[in-house]
Image (cartoon, rainbow over all chains, first blue to last red; front, side, top):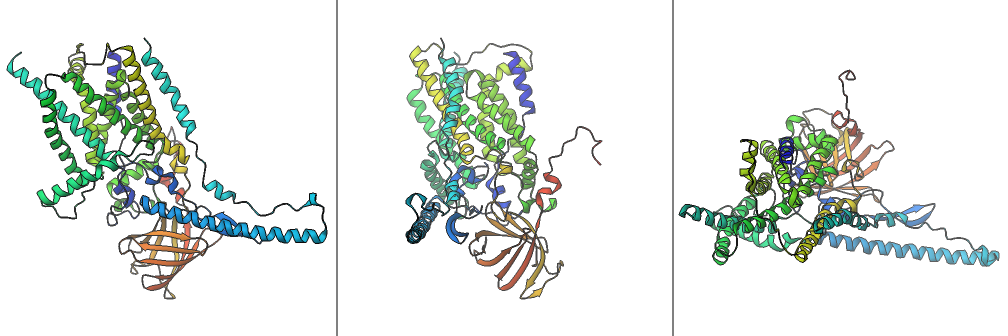
Length: 174
Length: 420
């Protein structure tokens, strides 16, 4: 016990560096002055950038791109609007984005169907056997799939269960 | 027992109750935003804010526009801290009248210590992991890097210096995580309390010394750490100063039934698991384990203005043309910042339409929006044109390699020989 106390004292003497970040710093780092400091996002009492706690905040923006003369649904390169939004505003934005994405998907499907029909007609004309039907050539919207990343925090939960179970076993040991 | 000692014992019991109530209210109303645990702050903070607003305007006669919200060092937060203790005194008195002579003070203090330990542990883990993953002391933004030291406020400068050192930030974070973990277990609570007290004393000194606006919040943490260590004060004093060993046992739930022991251990395990999950989940979800390397939005960076046409007239880069753009910056949180020739800066909310190649800049004060057409060149430079603040402008912006600035070079030499 004495040793522990000595170590604790020594460690506490050299304990360093917990400084809570303030919203003031986060906001005024925009321009390096106090002039633009305003209360416009929920406070995080000094933790890191707010979007860390709202990972869905970095949202994809969809657009139609033309690749090899074909319109495909894709995600805008790496851009995301990062202006802080309230939860309700964000939900509204998300709804709108999903709606737009669905519409674009529909448009894309429509184009694919027209192309398929045209390809069928062409096939019939050329009397190609069924087995040699042309493959679907439209690019799949892989980028948008990536954007809605399938996070799996289960591994973390499982990993943390190990030390916690160990603690439990130690605690209840007679 | 003498009258004096009876009064002292009763006062201790009452003050323990007061602290228990005051800290409980504080925790319920100022708790951090959560992802896994229920966000209890949302339920209680509105009532607390309404009360601070009422006290501020009606009792103290403050201006109606004072910041009554419970945020970093707002007037409302200070007022709320006072409210917590006033309510603690009142509710503590009621509870004291009900439970006096029925509950031992040592048991009450144990309850207070457990509450404070878990609260402080949670906060230390939150802030500790936030540092370990380099989110709290983030890499300085390009606009901060191009602001002179003399023009940078002390708190932001301190933040930027800390943010420039990956190793030191992680070291600070690891210490906090360690202190937080030690606080979670009965056997290591004193060690955790001492370590927390050391860390938080330094934090409070830095926050006060560098004018960092979490003064009250960090002081509350310090007080929590102090109250955890307080019952061991006599023992520590005897050991460290008088070189003696005092055996002063503090109350602990010993001798309880096996069933109760298992239940308590199970509850503790679940709470610890939840706290750790709460602290680590945001990073696992975002896959961001080093914020310095996290993806930045498009156009993020610093730009030097090579040419500036105003109503088709070229404006030379001279200090006399104070409103000519000198540099422009894109901040990762969605801001376009212009540095003028006189050195002053103005930020605009920044949005971009890549499809139509448009930038939308909204003045942060006047809320006037400007839409500018942009052209992105092969070398990353930009041409921006359009009607901005009443004049037609055409600006050619050359991208600056801000990551090569000396502050961001992670150089390390054991000897001075390598320094040329």
